[in-house]
Length: 197
Image (cartoon, rainbow, N blue to C red; front, side, top):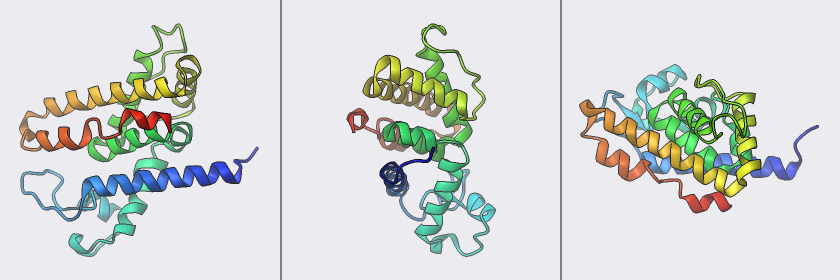
């Protein structure tokens, strides 16, 4: 069974919107000597850009190149497309967290949130927190939606992911120069009312 053209169009539109939102939050070229990521443009570090065979100056890296990386590394590779299809808002939370803290960490936060919401395995099975969003993780989210409803499931997951992300920032005492900006721009940046869309 294939996805209908309408569903495909909706998924493509959601992915485009998520990437556009991420690029807007990340901004343009930055080279802060205190940032261990080094040179960054459109939120893509020099290391990630080079991994994708970009050889030019980081200041000149095209936005389209960054958008391609966002799709490959932060949506497709970590397995987030099925989640984006189920809930655009949860998908955006996953992608935004992955861009800022790494896909493995974002995926673990999502899995931990799901396990925290299964009422000790009564509502759906506890999943392995392995940082890989596969069929088991997707099915757990579907179960949460079935039990709590689409809107509340989305809101609960976003709240728990934000809580874990905030705790992560507070643990990075050696990078606390960046904590105010991270909290201002990354915690709560996917509004809960988006869950109703």
